[in-house]
Image (tube, rainbow, N blue to C red):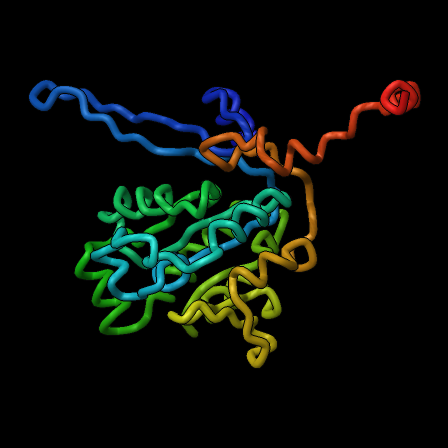
Length: 263
């Protein structure tokens, strides 16, 4: 804990996402820069895990190669749902068995998703540290993406010690996702899987078929308010919107205004 505090202080990190640049200068190649993001979260934060291919995108395997075909490529209602869950105080972690070489493309896709002005909350993007062909072989041929996910999510889980259950809920699209999420302690009644039609199933009650849109309507019941987020997980602040405008208290009402109007 003390090391983390010193690290946080030396880098002047703020809560939420922090943009960083790592540069290396050599005599022959000059200066090379690598941009990234460090997320500063609290040990007791509640984290939502989300798969990408087949969960945010409509297709599973083609998401490796063609991630930005158009609006129909994304499941309807997912941005609005994730946005509302994030506003209730939950953090988002995006985990995919895609190869790490697709990091820029995948991050660009997540930033591109937009439902009438509503975007996905920012969060760490965890990809497989292997080549594109190795990742494709593991996920498409072997059909064992859980190899990477279980190990990766276990490492993340250990960062939250002494909190042994940081993962509150998880979204996926395959039995392998369900297996991975159960292995890292996600409760079965908060594991959701979606099919290509956009039908959402809660794992402990598989006969109850819903959707991202319907889940969004009962979001406060499934994801109770923890604390009101200050939009730190969104690239653009939503301090002015229909919701925040009408939420403000009404101005004081004077009786004399009524009398003057009636006369």
